[in-house]
Image (tube, rainbow, N blue to C red; front, side):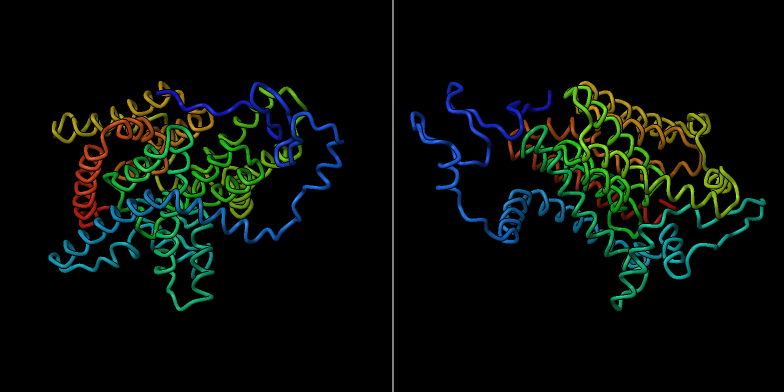
Amino acid sequence: MAAKTHSETPAGEHTGRDGACPHPRGDPAPRCGDNRPVTDLATASAPPPGPASPRLRTAFRSALRAAAPALLAYTAVRMLGLLTLAIWAAVAERSPHQLLSARWDSLWYARVADGGYGYTVRLPDGSVHSDLAFFPLLPGLEWLLSAVSPLSFADAGLLVSWVSSLAAAWALYLVGERLYGARAGVCLAVLWAALPVGVVQSMAYSESLFTALAAWALYAVLTERWMTAGCLAALSGLTRPVGAAVVAAVVIAALLWLRRERVAPPPRVVAGVLLAPLGWFGYVAWVGVRTGEVTGYLDIQDGWGNGFDGGWAFSRFIWGHLTDSVIAGLGLVAGVTLVLWLLYLAFRQRQPPPLLMYTTIVVALALCAKGYFGSKPRLLLPAFPLLLPPAAGLAALRTRTAAVVLSALAVASAIYGAAWLHGSGPP
């Protein structure tokens, strides 16, 4: 399904029926046949300027009202997941709070928030795990919230994640609505909530924060709000290494805009492009200065066993499962095939190039990096444009049919997420 098109009337100009009486949008229009000067009419009929705040509040309430079905449905899916986790944890005599806020990466983020960077762990095999592998925005927000409230660092991380996940759902709705209609926007937000690893959206991890920043940045690109897109891209670059994908999306969008318009780049476009990489390059450069090596951040990741090898290590991992446990191996093959098929559908759907650029980079970094392979589903969480083809398909179904499908996915996600967090992990 191709993206829905919008009017190509030049910005700032309105044309009446059959091209009659053109006038600048936002300025009062003269009546056809009125011979008085336009400036006199404008002066006579222009409304007095009013305060911006009431208009902004009205616009916000209108936007929130439009997104309410998506936000409520998203919240219902995530609440089902948390309720299932709480029941499972009660049976297993575990703490759901601890499962969500004080395990694996959550502990590293809280440690950075508490004492800053500089903590390392040397493993028996000689490898060194440094906290410099974790980008600073989430621990910075944890520190800030803890400083102004009674929240612990862990609880502050949970709050950031929960608020960010709602912000991400809102942005997903807007992207889906702009491209394929409001029903597709709602379905996109619900599908993202009902992913098998959707429980990560409710953990003190950085995936929700990053997805919110990335999705809003992409929406800003689609609506040509270049300064906003650049600022959000810079913040996403301070959140996760894959923030480079958001930077690439902003740059390719600006280049395509300049190619289409064939004009000198306006200051707002230039500023957006220059702002976009500041977060990612700034942190990577700071790590390089701190370690005394140009490749400092890559060396830190190598200490964790991470790095980009084109998918060789992951292919060997899959092959090992195929020869050892056929069912597990086939499951891995099916999962990778599904991701690649969804990526193919995204291209076939003719999604806007910035979305395709962003999604391709996220998928490539997730599937073609070595490291802990159990984390790959989580690393794919920000690749929400992969869900646009099924979201558009569900939107075309009858409401009852789509609701049944999404409800079944939500139940399956809740059960899988609870079991996953009670496993050996880390997710």
